[in-house]
Image (tube, rainbow, N blue to C red; front, side, top):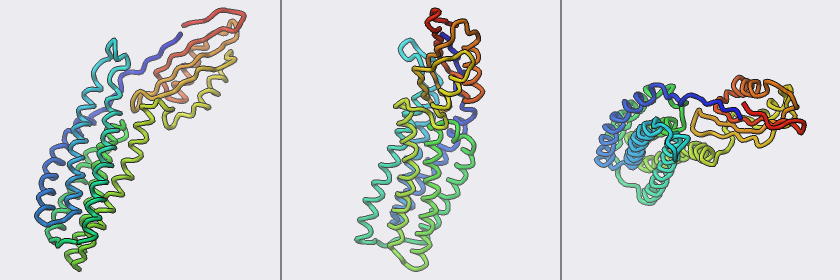
Length: 294
């Protein structure tokens, strides 16, 4: 039996970036909520509600990153890496909840559009867009490190797009008194939120269900292992993700009697061709010999 264990997943300075964005999002969430209440703008209130989910998502992201650093225990032998996946799933679910609320409020306003202070709404929305663009710049490069950080990044991106919608709505209300523009922008924001959350939820569920990681073709892995000199059969092949960036593999290889170096070559193939480092491989000799272990 051979084991090759990857070093703990490194998130670089992602936690510092998230910690820097959190107070920015919190401050402007309050400002946008007050602005939406004063201007009677659903688009601004929807955007503020989305920013509330942003703040919660950023806080949850930081907490999950801290938990994930805890070492394995006798009862949690893989450690706490999946805390980040659970946080990503929670972030996706909150995004959907925010979108449903926005849809419900927009429908009510379609039926009875209230007066909206377009000019003030426009000014607040522009400020929100600037804050979100700064936040996206701070998080640049980190959102690809894990589903957890990606969830926080998608929250901020969705809010930036929401600010664009609020700006367009505010401009139309201010210039033409088109009150319907406010709920229309809100629906557009809601659709963008649902779209951004769906892929996040789907990928988080795939990890929790221990599906094959995206980008790893199990048949290609099987063929590569089966092509190693001395390997006659590959079975019990399992490939899954413990967390983002931490792919695990286990399999049994049936080797010809007397074949040497099979384990080392298998580990080399997995490492160099598929970037899989955390592996458990059992080599079984054919009927001419017993089990071989390394």
